[in-house]
Image (cartoon, rainbow, N blue to C red):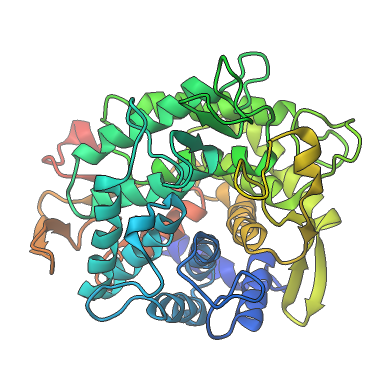
Length: 459
């Protein structure tokens, strides 16, 4: 029995070396390293700053690192974060008092590095961002404002910027009350912005109903912007990575994801497999297929199916979407590198010059190549889709990790006592996270048991 297990496991380890062509996920990551070798100045004519756009890219590269086992990708993440995070945990260019929800996004990369390296400066940086959320202005029901300069407003974008970090922080640093807050905010934005006819969510909601773009009855902006719905879809799928499955609102979040996935499927272009800039107007004058939203939907659906949140039937939606992206948006850049075309550079509400959320507005924003939001989402999507051919290898199999006889704890540098070594989610070198990732990407379920492993339990 042991020999059979060993042969299966070593076969899974060898799969990564069987492909002849470099996966598109790695080619996209190589482009990032070539374009931004030192620091990521994402706004033309402005210096690099602590920015959500870089956070999206780094999260994409994190997936590429885990998938490829190539240290250059980890080194790039660390170098990029170290450009900002100082030894005392201060963050260059970050201003807490701005209360900009976008600036929380990069905190996930700080937590990622803390869990691997144990360097307390990353914890201090994450704690600084957590302190922003403690005093961040909210709606009367408890949703974070998008920015201090946009009072009473909640945008779909902001759910992705804050909630995955917030959940990761709760799980890593033992602050379980956060989970209630996260669930409440995910539920509230669906409650206020979901259109019962299409199942899609409007880009923004103004509690005060005072903005010119806001409907005077619902407070919603007037259109379904593709990337904003993509941000929300990714917030749901990434929150579930760290959300306790015994929490009373766990099923609520999974159900929201399922409702949204159905709505996303309905507006997928049947010919190309892609999604439009304004989702529900495929025949509208000037509307176009857009790459960042398409990548976000592919990622969210493919990952949702793999993790068991979404039905298997939706996997075809993600695969068709990714094939459409390869056909329409991907082009060769150099050896081992690609470009990603067709990403809208930005879209927002209000501000100066004023953005009214109209159909015409969304079509006026510039469409560019190698935009960070598109690149980051594309890497995430590619990593998920590249797993699909091997998922059948371990289908129906489970690897159980004993955490009863082998039950160890350790106190980290923040004085948090945590399960150590014999757990799947430990990222430092003597943890089992790499084994777990290899099993999962090949369709094997991983579980651990802290109860006495009786015969009945093992069955």
